[in-house]
Every structure is written in structure tokens, then in C-alpha cells.
Image (tube, rainbow, N blue to C red):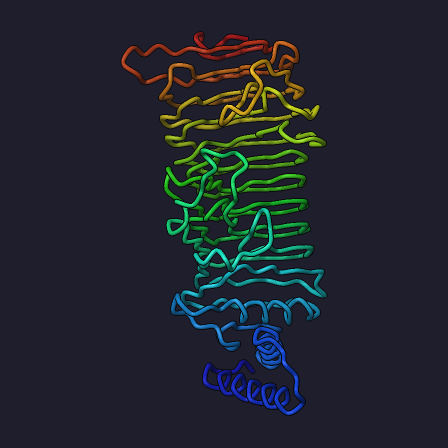
Length: 425
């Protein structure tokens, strides 16, 4: 039977008393956090409800939005991860503030985080120590992981966005990502809201068989580097029925990714749905088998985009990409392949792209554009795009002169059923 809050508090009190008394009596000089970790762990052993459910409020978490509940969540994770079969960590209604949490496996069973309340990421950046790319909630080396519910992961980004210097310095100090799945197999993210990340909202790295559905991601359109969902070196990723509005890419697909299925996503504000950027680092791997279907992009600064560095250092290939049934609603640059991508002017003036783009299909793309150039295929003269197909692309520029245009530089392929202004292949 699960303990009530009063009972849990008494359990914690007696554990603290016993541990402190023992330490004093035996001359131990443990650090306070070491004693606290032991107490939380001991309390977790008795705080499980039926079926291995760990309610963080039974472990001392306080949902007032101010008290630090990191220790309680970590204690619940350690106990749930050690348990066999299905284990559940319950985040009940309330606002629970935490610092960085590395939820490390491997686990003995399948762990679900039931997010009924809200987790708030502390704006004390000293609580995210020791990493070049800091993370808030990182799930690492775990199979059969689920996070679901109607609650929020609130990064509280507005309190620290002013410390983001990446627009001026491409090698800037990074702020914490909200939710990171690192080497997770068979994972589910369902129903939750990710709000105002300090940096990326979700980062999927070295994962396989990840399903994201019914998720809402929200940050202002001018918030810096708040990508919705980024992925890299991962396979079999599905994103469905999800609404994303951010200050950067709604979805970005990085090197080494294959088998991506994006369907029923609404994007905006943001920078659209992007593959890349590619070619910046050595030893990047190919991107292939990407499908984007039945999506809507609203007032984004780009639509469907593939981008690679003009002076790329990796011989990367992007292939077997399909966009089908996508609606553009007043989008800038609706269709763009950019092999001359160069943010912050960091590229050489005469770059030699090593990224090849082939077998890309744009089918049934409709709606309105905020820019005259609806289609921009800006491919490399030394490594042209090949196998590009545009079928029934009917996006119109809504400006005063109504002049819809297309640019196809060094792109090889075929246009069928498109507006005549867009049939540049």
C-alpha cells in the first residue's frame, strides 16, 4: 500500500535521524548530499505502491515550484530501474522544480514516468554541471522506456535565454536541453507538453524504435535555438499527431539517421522541418529513408529544407526522402535544398561541398508562400542533386505582384503536374 504524505514524511524523518545518529556515533564525516542520497534510497524502498509505483511526493518532493525535488525523483528512478517487470514513477499534480537528472540504465524492467504534474527546470545553471552539452532530463542506456501523461516539462527558458550567445559565437556555451533520449531502444513519448526549453526541447541520440505521439512543444518564435525535436545517429523514429511551435527547427534530422516517419505534425512558428545541417564535422554518417506526410506548416521561416555546409568536411549522402501531402500556410521558402548553407559566415568563400543529395520527392505540396521563390534547389555545381522529383507542387506566392518563381541550380530530375512557374526541373 502506498504511504500517505504524512506517513512518508515520518519515514523520512526517522531515516534522517538514524543515519545522522549512526554517522555521528561512528565518527563518519559524510557529505550532506551523500547522507541525503542514502536516505532517499532507503525511503524509496518503502514508498512503492501496488505494481511498483513510486510517487515522488512520498519521497519528499514538494510541488510548490520552489523546493528542489531532484533527490526525490532520482531516488524513485533508482528504485524503479532496479525493479523487475513494469515499474512506474508518478509525478502527481503540482509543480516540482529540479536540476539536472541523469536517468541511467540499464534497468531490470520497463520503466514508465507518468507525468500528471509539471517538472520545472531550475534556472540556477550551476545545477547542470560538467558537460559541454548539458541536459536537464537525460534518459541514458535504457530499453523499454515510456514517458506519458498530460503534464509539462517546463524548461523555464525565458529566465536564461539572454545568456545564449550562439547567434554571435558559433562555438558558444550551450544551455541545457530539456529531454534527451541517449541510447534508448523501444521508447515512447506520449501526450506530454514540453514548454520553453533553455535550448533544444527534445534530443534523440543513438536510439532505435522511438515513438512520439500527441506531444505539444511550445516556445516563442524568437526564442534562441529552441529546436522542437532533434535526432541523430538513430533509426526507426516515428513522430505523429504532434504540434510544435519554437524559435528554431520544429524537427531537425541530423547525420546518421534512417527510417524516419513524420506524419500529422503541425509546425509553426519555427524554421520548418529540416534535414541537416550536414557536413560540419568529420565522420558524419548518411541520412536515408525519411518520410514526411500530411503535415501543416504555418508562418514558418522555412518549409521543407535540406541543408549542408558549403565547405563540408564529411562525404555524406542524403537519399530516399519523400514529402507528401504537406500544406504551406504563408511560409517563407516553402521548398529548399541548400548545399551552400553557411550560418554566422564561418565557411570559406569557395567551399567544395562533399554532401550529395539524391532521390528526393516532393508530392502534393499545396498552399501559400510569403516569398516569391517557392522552390529553391540550390545544389552544388561539383556535386549536383540527382533524382529530384516534383509532382503536383502547387504553392502560390501571395505578395502584391503575385509573381511565383522557382530556382533549380544544378538539380537533376523531373517536374510533373506542377504550377508552370514551379516546373524548373
